[in-house]
Length: 324
Image (cartoon, rainbow, N blue to C red; front, side, top):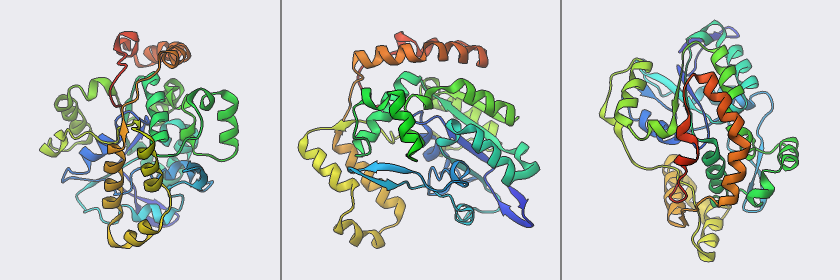
């Protein structure tokens, strides 16, 4: 949408997908970006509204702390949407937004002004138990997590990491505390729709019809793509781990190839290769029990807030095998 900020007309997203992380937002992004009436930038998860006041945060990468991939610069963020055609509606997907709701909502109001009320919000929520484990395993597969899961979810470790400026996504537990997040987003924006991940991806045609209606676009075959994207897993063996380390870390051959191929092509090739180096990692029963205990009250509270049952997230829905 076109809005005015500091005396200039700017184009900002007509809709946002703020999360939750590991809830199918990448698959949804890939579906939507192929619709002729929508424009989704090549850069998924710029996280602008979360970090525009503080700059880039950090994360582990093959044993070293490096700056993350985010876009805190306002003009650079606006450039993401410059290629959008006049008739297209612009969207953006950044999973820190749901977690970092207070700061994000404040910044949206700052840049959108009165137009903030017109912004449409799409949220996918996944069983927080499965979400936390999937998030951790994904980071391990990308050489971004040096700690065991039991260490990484200790409250003091999470607090220290946040204080050191690490990426918010290292708070594996906090990302699944949906109730306060949803309450804040609902209060701030009248045009909001929430879907449950497990239901959404079990019947894509029906829910994509709902989504198309919400975005006021025609249903289109591009919305029914079923290609699996962004699965998590652990390295198949020591050789695969070495390959992942080479793939994810800095190297001379990557520097040479970088100017020759578009960023999106390089990213897809990297992810396809990484997928071949990993295998599904079932959640250990002790971890499942611990997370189930942590999130039991949270799920109950979310049921009250949403006014619906979330039995689909309870023990009967636990799948101990398969990628997620």
